[in-house]
Every structure is written in C-alpha cells, then in structure tokens.
Image 1: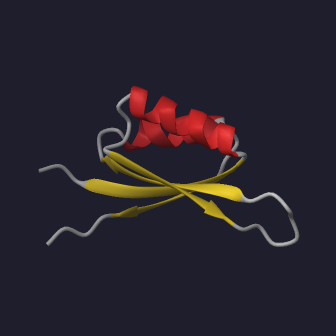
Image 2: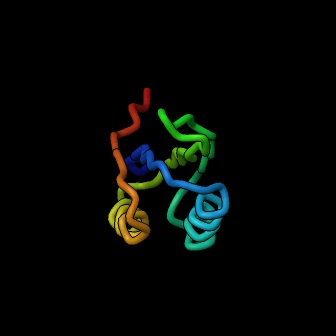
Length: 81
C-alpha cells in the first residue's frame, strides 16, 4: 500500500473550485476530493476549501497544479493504522 497525503487548499468562487476539482480528478492526481463552503471574515462571498487525498507518487504534481492557480496549500501525511 502506498503512502497517502491529505492536501487542503482554499479557492475563491464555486466555479473555480469546481474547475480545479474536475481537473485534478481528470488527471488522476487525487483518490478523493471533498469540497466545502467556508466563511471568509469581512466578506460577503464565501471561499471553497478542497480537501484531497493523494499518493506520495502524485503529490508533487498535485502541489504544482494547485500552486499554478495561485492558491496556497497545506499537506500532511495520513496516518494509517
């Protein structure tokens, strides 16, 4: 079994979030994606947080893909029993 990493990123706009999620899934860069609306203080419009699980092999490509959108990301290993 490969090593897995959880990656979280926040992006403005539901259309941009959907496009990013679709591109990641189409490219096979994540095994799962969760998209959730998150409030942004002092703004009327929410942002969208994507939480993805990827393999160690795909992590560099996934990180590069997200950074190309201008979004920041946080990665941490998934602890398996």
